[in-house]
Length: 443
Image 1 (spheres, rainbow, N blue to C red):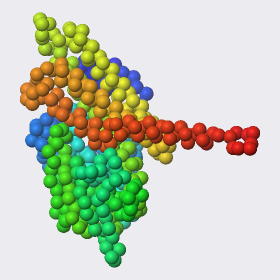
Image 2 (image 1 turned 120 degrees about the vertical axis):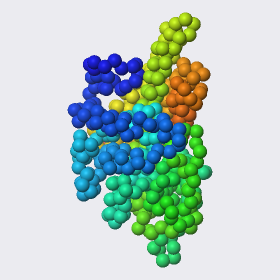
Image 3 (image 1 turned 120 degrees about the horizontal axis):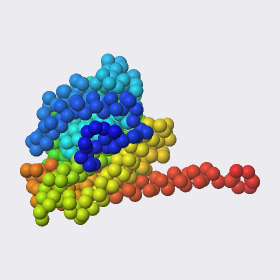
Image 4 (image 1 turned 90 degrees about the vertical axis):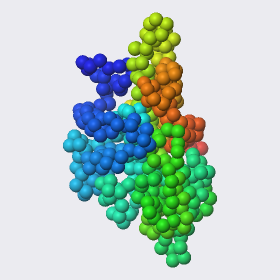
């Protein structure tokens, strides 16, 4: 057990010192090194930078030089490429070939310890979701043209899926990519909305329509952004995640070489759906930490705040609220840990089938839990929790970030429905495989 007295709900059980079957020595060493780096270079000024709506460029440079943006990629890391670029470990603690999804989970959790999604998201979202399709599906020439600068973070990338009229309904994306008469270029027209990190990205891994309607008409293309002819971008004012660079992108006859195609034409829907699994799990991990920050702040507040002649924590109704939210929080974290452990130990093909629907559900549940913890904190902080300054400032800010968890990456209701549909689909496939062939008596 740890000799430190931790505020209730402030840390995951394994950090408090409680036994856990998931964490090896490599994970515990990584957690300590990661926390030290992130506290020094991000958390100390996260609230200030979020208030200013922009994280300074030097923070990106600091993380890039330390290779501390690579941990946001899905595990395992692209070891061959990293070693080719001279990257052999992260912070001298974990060798790139030893990296697993538990290391990724720890990194995502530590990055969110300010309670705000904007500052870490301003650094990680593009790398985390925009780069994997190139790594997983890009051909050799595409990877050789883009990965050296993107993996070393000399250039920035984002993922561009959502449009003004197509969010969770990905199959109905309307941005078009039509080939020129000589077949050497795509001419791209359309718009993308709510694109995180877009405003400062050099490229976007973009979903476009290369043929007819529906999912089979979708492809993914690497599209240059900053300063590129036909591309115009502007930041969007959103209620939460305000420093993450939410962007509206307009594309007017944007000419892109056909060599920028990711994988094969018509396979975009498959690539997007596979990419969503990492995105949704990342959201779930981060949102669970945000819930932890909000609830532990509420505990700290009610321990010192007095009303009716005694501390608020002495009121049974206050303890009851904390208990309900705390039970949800710790149950959610236990699910996240279990889920990540399964990701580590299942073959990828099996994980994609067995965990795809559950990924949607764990993401949706993280938003529900964050909402409960943020509301609990705001109610216990009272007027302070509704004020944009003072001791309740962080709680007020977190409460505005809740929709930024429940909507992006697949809206909550869509995710819950998707999860059950996928589970039912898997069940039917397995039961069909077990059926006795007609006309035989053998199984």
